[in-house]
Image (spheres, rainbow, N blue to C red):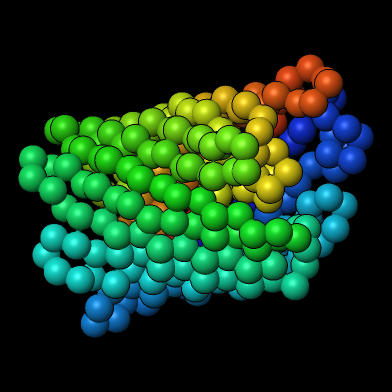
Length: 236
């Protein structure tokens, strides 16, 4: 079982509707192992755009073979624009030689219109370090919106003991601010994030994250967003 919370603040360069109303996002999820892989149910609450909303999701990680496994996601909400009306995703992962891992897939978000997002990533373990380069590509009528993120983790103990650093550009559908994707496809964005994960007594995992986003705006100075996240996982 995992309980998580994110607080997202917009600085004074954003309009008052965002600057005066920071976003709050909380979720509760439960994971179980099946014969073909893990299945996760999740319920999320958010206060965004001065409105409240709920979203229900299911994630699954079916194992196909010793080389391939997949990721499946489906979610629904009746609370636009706090959450997309419908979301879905699928990725195929491959365990490659020399500790590489590759991924290709897509994400789908249904707001007032549909947004298709295509993703690919390449990861590698080197000693106690894990490196991952990921891109999200959003085709448009006149251009291609692109997001790139390089993430590094240093494992200092068990599998849940790590420090992470990430840098990138663009908006990811996996971020707490992902609902901005539909309205800001053509805006440039830079980001930096830090994370610390620690396991206690083999059953309790605590994660804290901090992110900074610098975003281009129409006819205004660049805006800064600050996201702090806390997560607690209890293993039974």
